[in-house]
Image (spheres, rainbow, N blue to C red):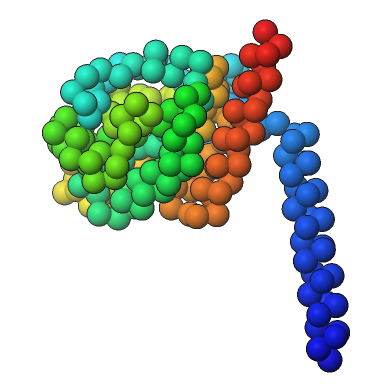
Length: 228
């Protein structure tokens, strides 16, 4: 009986190894998709950009946790991961920020990767509030920027660039101050400002997938640079 169990375990481990290798080579031979607005849930996308086939994340300029300005030049030639949050959120935001910190820590020495967190309550998320939040989560401001500023601009980015906010029928637990509900999505964007993936920012499994896709995209970018 023990011998049979041992053989079954060996067969299972061997099969698992084959599946893992096959998946690795599948990923290597199938680059990450480039998302157009039409491939995203329509509720997240402003109507007039829904059928844009050459979508790019638009230019922005906002205040960050250091008291300085972060604009799109922070992303020049870089891959980035973006999410939307607010510092007083007591539900998914702390989980998402913890996951973002975990992913960032896996690439702490990678200069070709950036992280952005946009506040959906910029009128409350002042620079001191962002600075305190950054300290709480160990944010490296050389790699990860928490952003606040003009509310209309941030919501345009969410609805017309990253596709991560939906109109709210009920409040976000903020006393009705937010007229949108932010999703739990992390968005992976390449150096050409094209969306390459969406990930559940509350899931460990999804963070492992994000890490794997970042590695694939970094490899893709380096290959492109070598060809140029």
